[in-house]
Image (cartoon, rainbow, N blue to C red; front, side):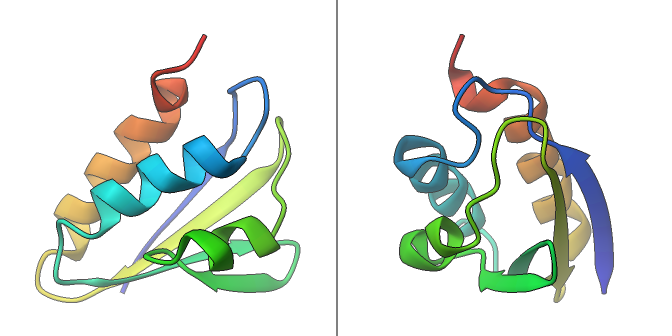
Length: 88
């Protein structure tokens, strides 16, 4: 299992548009992807799941990926977050 912890830098944190962008990227990979914020875990391929963890701007988000393409999935998702989901 691959794991990365990242800080959300976009203005609104993990809101609906950001969650949709995250899921769109996550679904391109076979790996199982999970998000963890303050002890809550969500399926990284579920918009509703991601929204339930309510990670705000500046919040720390841990991404876990398990599967044959887990490393590539984390690279793509980290790039998305570091680029503020294409916002700002």
